[in-house]
Amino acid sequence: MSHHPGIFKPLPAEHFRYPDEGGATNAETRLSRLPGYLTPNRQFFVRSHFDIPELKATDWHLRLTGDALTREHSLSLKDLEQLPRVSVIRAIECAGNARAFFARDFGSPAEGAQWGPGAVGVAEWSGVRLSDVLALAGVEEGAFHVLPEGLDSGRFARPLPIDKALADDTIIALAMNGEPLPIDHGFPARLVVSGWLGAASVKWLGRLEVSRQALNTYWNTQDYTLAGPDYPAVGEADGVPITTMPVMSLVDLEDGARLFAGDTILRGRALSGEGQVIEVECCLDDGTWQSATLHTPNIAGAWVCWSLTCRLDAGRHVLQVRARDDQGNEQPESVVWNNHGCLYNAITRIAFHMENSADRVDDAPLQ
Image 1 (spheres, rainbow, N blue to C red):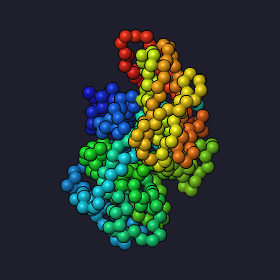
Image 2 (image 1 turned 90 degrees about the horizontal axis):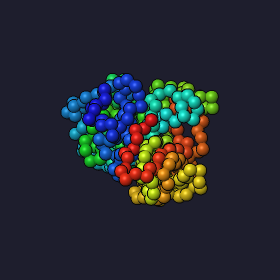
Image 3 (image 1 turned 90 degrees about the vertical axis):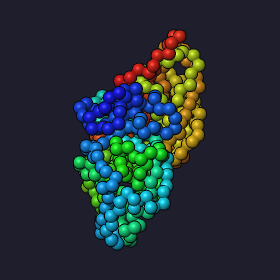
Image 4 (image 1 turned 135 degrees about the vertical axis):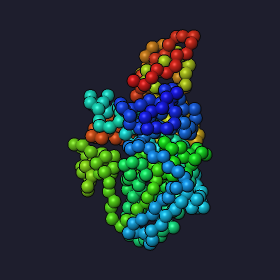
């Protein structure tokens, strides 16, 4: 069982792969190894831009500042624990999830960590509403942006519009799947911003600034934007700042996997930012599209598990999957290039092999 530089939890190879060379603090979940609806803490992907801070709960404070607050305020962990406790089941997905497929589709890679499809997970997050915390300092009329800032070495920060910050399901999480937040996932407190890119859910939260003006940072103007020849610059940004994540399907099978020939059940997951997936369709070997079975739960802002029962002969097969949500959004045949390699959600496609063998062969590693 191995550790990766800068990541604290064990990262066994059967559960993770690394999208970067070197010591970057990124680890991708192998979706084929997920046991159920929720992603266990030990298998949840890790994405950090800077060194992960080691913080003590007894020393931690959250500072509330800004010209759109009636007063500045500081809260300890015990102070937060006095507020009404809420729980939400939500996905956190990196905007660069599946970025590696840009290289496959366009012949050259987009910039950034070359994630496969596993920079995503669903957990039950428990904590307090961000709106309840901000109310303690008095949010004034005319508030425009809330800027959460982390306590990591680079003080990662990315703004939220006031309406999103005050939404009922935007929370400061103190626990993940019933356990205190692991250090890799933001201990002792992090934001969970439902349906938005993972970068909005700032970890190791240390400060919240509430302003009447825009509080833009590098992370919503020069990165985590859709930038390139087909995207206009918006304001200070090099393109279109990313907010809500798009509809996407995932397969609980790795490219190049080997399975028994004959009757089999193919499985996966599908999600759509703040929406709810209402249909998943599969196409095997250029055949007709057929509806997969959707299973419960199917939680908006999280994902739904799907399955397809089929009979397959020995040999190589190609599976295509597309999902559609309750707003009519559907995975496209292809995506438009963007320089940062974000929001890849073209129809999912993997190849796998069925073998006539008495012994099952485990999934091959992701290439």
